Amino acid sequence: MWMASSLALAACGGLDAETLEDTESPSVTSQAVVSPSTEDADRRIIVYQTTSLQLMRVDNKGTSHLVAQRTGEPEVSPDEKRVVYAKLPDSHLAGDAVRSSDLYVLNVNSGKSDRVTQGFDDSSPIWSPDGRVVLFQSSRRSGVPALWRVKENGKDLVQVTNKGAASQLSSAYIPNPAQGGTLEWDADRRIIVYTTTSLRAGEDGEVRVIAFDRNYDVASASSLGKGFAPEWTERGTVVYSRNEGGRVVTIEARVN
Image (cartoon, rainbow, N blue to C red; front, side):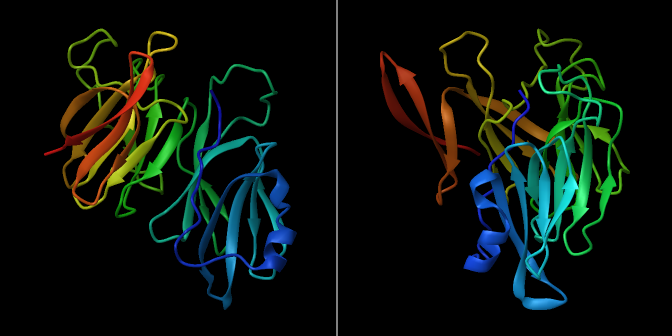
């Protein structure tokens, strides 16, 4: 499924009434406030996506600019100066199967986008906590669904998971995060927690964790069992929900 990921408002500040009016807020599906423009520190630049999959940028004067069409899954970098997003081909029509999508990085202050990947089904980009690399999903690159990483200039493209897995039935296979599902970083320990897509309708997917080393290679990966909506706590544990016997229970698990 092609869909936008939700972007929380950055903690750096709020929106003024004039800017909200200019950005056509009723059509916004995801929105982020990013760092103040170097031209005017009193006005913040806004990047948002509309329901028609247009990525828009509002400059520090309140003027809206079209960044790209047929976009999805925009994610703001930790320094709030860049936005990575996936883009479908210009020839893609509503209802078409998604066979190809590329990743781009938008420089928020200049408004310029640079293509990072090309020619495959690259999707669901997320920044590493230090902003050095982008992690994303692809199935066509290796023939097996996997996580990959790349620098924002397109260099150092590396497969991160499932390098030794011949298929999804392999014992070494690590399932990808569900499209549009919950994925959260424990930034200090470079660990992600996420949910997978259930293979059976009506059942919970798995809650899984992947720990990375300093180069963002996989250090360990494990499952916490069936569940959904995982979140990190201040104690470094994971709290998530699970359907059991017709009711929803809350589970807390320690992650080492």
